[in-house]
Length: 393
Image (tube, rainbow, N blue to C red; front, top):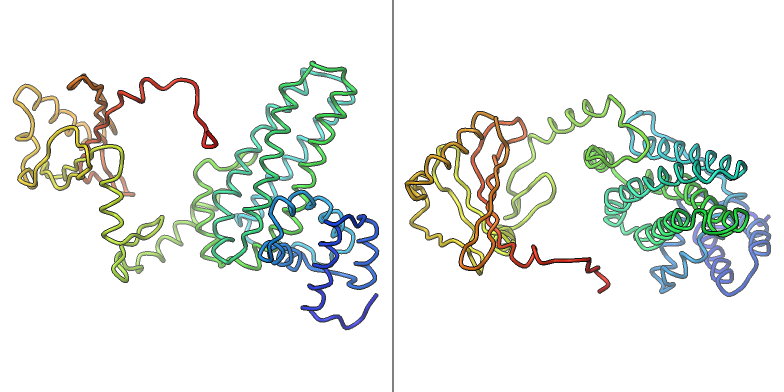
C-alpha cells in the first residue's frame, strides 16, 4: 500500500480508476489498484468523487450504470463506519429502520422462492411496492437539502436507480405465473433482490454518512417535520418526534415574518411581486372573507368566472350574494366558525360551462378560525379528460 498519499492526490487516483472502470477495466483489477495505491477511503470521499465526476461532465446515466460496480468495489476497502446520531428520532436512524424492514421483506421473498409459492410471492411483492413511499421521501425530502450544499449526485444517480427498482417490482408482479418458475426467478426476482440490497448498501455506507457530514442540525429537524406527512413505508415515527418539533417551533418564534422585502413562510419565502403573481396565475378564482365576515381579498386572474371589483373589499359577505342564497352562505360560515365543517362544495352550469365552487374554513395552526376561502374553477375540460397524458407526452 502506498504511504503518505495526500487527500487531493487520493481523489485524483480514485477518479482515474473509476474512469478506467467506465472504459472497461474489470472490477477485480480496479480493486487491486485501489488496495495498492489507496488502501482505504471514507464514504464521504466516495460521494465527493462521484459529484466531481458529474461536475466534470461524466453523465449521470454513466455513473448510474456503474454505481453498483462502485459500491462493490468500495465495500471491501471502506474504513469509515456509519456513526449514527444518538437521538432516536434522527432521520438517518428512521431511514435505517425502513431498511431493516425491507431486508426482512427480501428474506420473505427468498423463502417464497424456495417454496415456489406464487401466492406468497404476490403478497410480498405487493408489500414491497410500498418501497416507492420510502424512495419518494428521499427524493422529495432529503435530496433537496443535499442539493443546497452542492451535492447533486443523489438526485441525478440514485433517483434513477429508484426508478429502475420501481420498474423491476412492477415487472415481477405483472409476470407472476407467466413463465416457468426457475426462469421467472432468474429473470425477475434475483435481479430485483440484488438491486434493492445494493441500494441499501449505497444508502447506509455512502448517502447517509455524506448527509451527516453536510447537513446542519436545523436542516435535519426540517426533514423530520416533512416526514410527518405519511412519508414512511414500513415503520412508524418515534413517539419523541412531536416533542422535538414542538421545541424547534418555539425557537422559530423569533424569526421575522418579513426579511429583505420577502415574506417568510414555513415552506419558503416570496417577494410581494412573486406572491401576487402566483395567486393571479392559479387556475382558480379565490376570494377571502375574514373572521368578521368582510371581504378582504380576491385574486385577479386573467379569465375570472364571476366578476369582482375593488368596491367589494370591506363589504359584508351577506351583501355580496342574492337574497335567495344569503341564508345558505351564512349557514356555511356558521359551520366553519363552530368547527362543525371544514369545507363545502357544489357545482353549477354557468354560461355553457361547468363551474365547481368550494368553500374552505381557514384556520391557524392552533385551529382558530381566520375566515372563509371561496375557490371557483371552470372544470368543463377537466370533466372530459380520459385515459392519461404523461409528462413525456
